[in-house]
Amino acid sequence: MNDFRAQWADVSSDVLSAVQAVGESGFYVLGEQVRAFEGALAKAAGVPHVIGCASGLDGLEIALRLTRWAAGTKVITTPLSAFATTLAIVRAGGVPVFVDVDESGLLDLDVVEALVARDPSVRHVLPVHLYGHALDLERLARMRGKLGLWIVEDLAQALCARFRGIAVGSVGQANATSFYPTKNLGAMGDGGAVLTSDLELVERAKALRDYGQTGKYKHELIGLNSRLDEVHAAILARALLPRLARWTATRRAIAERYRRELAHPHVQPLPAPSGSESVWHLFPVRVPDGRRDSLIAHLKHEGILSAVHYPVAIPDQPALAGLPFECVGELPRARALCRQELSIPIHPYLTDAHVGRVIAAINAWRVT
Ligand SMILES: *Cc1c(COP(=O)(O)O)cnc(C)c1O
Image 1: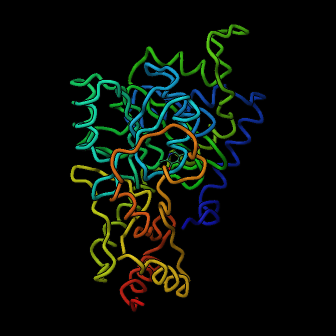
Image 2 (image 1 turned 90 degrees about the vertical axis):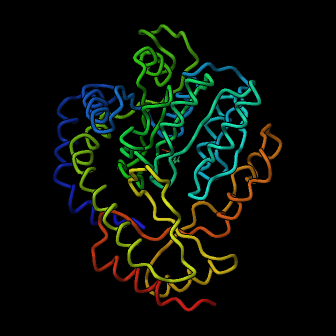
Image 3 (image 1 turned 90 degrees about the horizontal axis):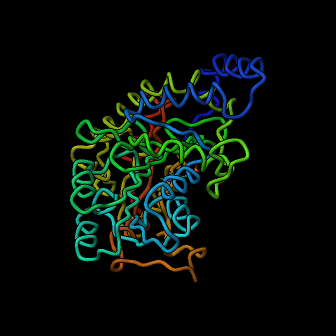
């Protein structure tokens, strides 16, 4: 699903010189490299302020705590995402409220809007730009203004995606992304960031990532140790971020080709939301109930890996048993995708020949 060795062959000399620069600086945590990376990412992502931190999970927790926050705050979110999305709400002391997904697999904003209109006790929403697609940001911006919502966008899978020109991470008051290695901008290890358009939140975010310090030995908040390392920031800024636009273009070309050439009647690409300028973190298809294992085995036999995103709806995870959360209805669309979704390979080091082999293998699948 990824080819980190091919990536290393491409990026190694830039990575090694980035590490060299950090070594020579003699400075390892929250220094010049982190500041430079934060500035460069803000420009690339189209969001005014970026605050680096140690992971996407921490970024989401910090972002939630930048909103109007108290223990027990209800947060609407999606049952179909990385578990970290919900984990951030729970770790921050909030209560997840799960709303079903739409036909693309993303949080259904019709249901969200109806819920916040009838229940004034719920003002927080944590939507996920899943699979590299941008949710309807015009609508989220309207809902934020009209209904007084606090929005925390999870853009871990969609850095640099846009909705009709609006950047992901620019509509929520505080938002977060991840640099986990498999993400579109993946570090050589863990990392994450908070993104915001609100300058007033920047100092608080910086305090929260660093023990809640607002000055040396001055702790005004109960913070985390969630600093971004200089070495990761340098690698990201010098070796990886400069390649992101090209990587995204490759992902888009592969997605386009899949959409044009996949022709199996039982393999339906999930539709991208209309208006989304997607960055194709994943390429999800759906297959009928009971057929997914057959397709996985057929692809494996052809030497092609695939993966399920996600096999279990988050409210069904054992870790949530006994914790407070709510579900709006039975979440039938999310549960159907848990049974039917399959992600086929899409990454920037996939060659035209590889993509052709995936397409040929899928089109030749004999359904069993
Ligand atoms: C990867 C991911 C996260 C968590 O990021 P980490 O850096 O692994 O903590 C959160 N949300 C989504 C949607 C993700 O894909």
